[in-house]
Amino acid sequence: MIKKLFGILICMLLITTVLPATGLNITKESVKQSLRLSDALIPPDADKRAQSVNLMQAPGYYETSEYMIGSIAVGEIFLESIGGNDPNTENWQPVEELNVQMEIGYALTQWWAVQNPNAQVSFTFDVHTAVPTTYEPIIHPSAVTNDAYEKLWVSEAMTYLGYTSGDWMQQTRDYINYLRQSKGTDWAFAIFI
Image (cartoon, rainbow, N blue to C red; front, side, top):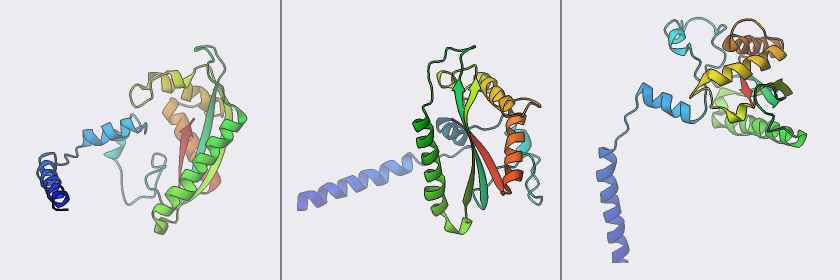
């Protein structure tokens, strides 16, 4: 018993001396790196827009998912390569699409919604399956490392869904704003799957 207590004491001393030496150094760059690792897309114009945010105004065109509170519309866009620019190597099966829809629904309604019940989070879904693209998105780098490819297939998907004005980010924002307005929610975002 004394050996166990002595071992625990040694471990605690090591931990208390190592932790302060390795303290947290949270910087803007470390936060961006963390987001890159999680595949979250930071819009290319985020820094420019952040400088002009007026916190006294209601959310506008660019502020579509600032907070995880209230009602949220979620656009689920299942991409399906049809060949052309890339070989068609991956195909969604209906059961796979259904499983992913259920997993997204569960993650948002059962997990996120209970993280802070005071936020009164609720979700509405807008699902699009078999959205054609001539690219095979899964074989290319993600937009957080290189948006050269993502902008191509996102633009094709948005054009297919009827959003043809501007670049890939404007097309996506047009869809997200339509989604928020048509579903009558506080916020909206899109997931490309």
